[in-house]
Length: 372
Image 1: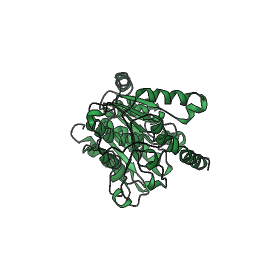
Image 2 (image 1 turned 90 degrees about the vertical axis):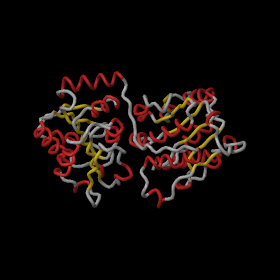
Image 3 (image 1 turned 90 degrees about the horizontal axis):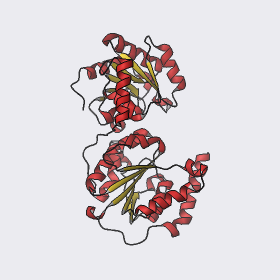
Image 4 (image 1 turned 180 degrees about the horizontal axis):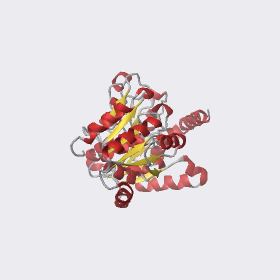
């Protein structure tokens, strides 16, 4: 209920500020890539998977505006997954919690943005409409503002604040569209075309060293271990952790592998059940840095996880991974990688997926040719 009141309050504030902050001036028929020197992209969703699924959109923006210095504003929880991304020159974070702690944080941030004198700001919004992102675009001082329409979400503010209101697909078209294509769809209005839907995560050199050291000392070295993440943020996406334990045990005992088990910030009870049910003693990694986890997964024999952000890390680093799906459609949400295999019950009930299905899928990946 609190979030609902907050959302309505933001929309009311945005409507009252539209005469002051709304877009003015002629709408450009096209944007000359050679005239775009400084480009701001705002993508503030709080889901790690959503951010990694937007990497093809960032790749397309880079190719469309090759001379631009690209700054990305991300939510703090997602900044790490794009920190070393070659399609972005700079990553900034903003959250409302910062302004609550420091009343002067927002004015300083706005002043910093305006000093950059951006030529173009693009708000990437597909799964929801963010009034905060729209207002950041408005106060950024960018010469041209572009952002997705809010009409599918019942919000009519985009046309008041953006010079270019970017379209979103109709529901019937979206039903058969991968989410990376969904992120690219509105950008076609800016001349952005991208056919490579794969994601990318680049660990830092320090994260690479940490992962290699952990694998060597605790797990037997590259290719001699599996990685298991039994948790998920949504209860409907959690495969019973006892089955994860059985599947991990079969793979480890059958293939002579050691096991690294990843505990996320909301995995407590599920992770405890996983540990209690297993016949093996895994090496536990509690909330490891994203890049370090990605580097560790990349060198694993195979990874097992639910439909969650960790699976998208696997897809973004070229790791072999079995992803267990519940109600979510893998044709829309699975990472675009031949080395990520989706296992899903026909009725969408994750509890109907068997240990045998997961172990068989992992076996196929273990005999697959080299990484992507």
